[in-house]
Length: 311
Image (cartoon, rainbow, N blue to C red):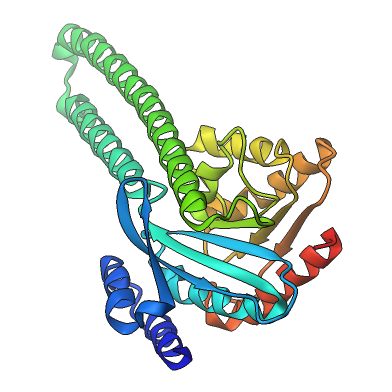
């Protein structure tokens, strides 16, 4: 049993970052023994869930990993971390699915950017060149200039409308992501009876961004890794959402992994300080892009933080 789990984790650690994430759930079925995972009905779909029990007699709590299938580069790190924490008295539950709807948000942004580029090219092609004009064309040039200005203002208005539509669409997608994540949390908790245990939720990236949109997060503590939302306005509000949570928060930052989240790391710390949020701790994961080399460091940070909380 132990060897099969080790082989599975190593296959994820050394897999290429471009491998399809659908194959990981397939690997769970093919490489692990039936006793190594549990198939649960999560929000109407059967998914394999990997669980590790605490190696110590007394369990500090259960860390529930919600890993988005789009975070391919984190797969090896997360799996190793879920395997490492039980040696410190923590049980772990690893759930992988399309949680944050990140790919849909990216598609919407790309569509808007393409529309904006087309509008910019159209506007540029309509502006007359100076070397094509002569003094005899002053009257015509004046009329063309007025038409060009009207065209430019029309393009600016269209571009502004496109940005408004983009923000509205992103808000709708974030709302859908929030509902999607809430349903999956409730289903997973019911299936594994997690609600009766001391629970710590660990999320990363866009999944963290969705999690902090929930009004009531069903957890005793929260661990977030490079949280962000794929929208500038909504991402600025994320720091206030984190500061408003009632649970203790461990904010893990890796500057090399995610520039969107790392740029707002200071703002998250400032917002939590201004809100007088209790038990907020931010730690930077030193090193290059996050990977298996930082597993022990992150595990010790989690252990120390939970010890500080009295877990």
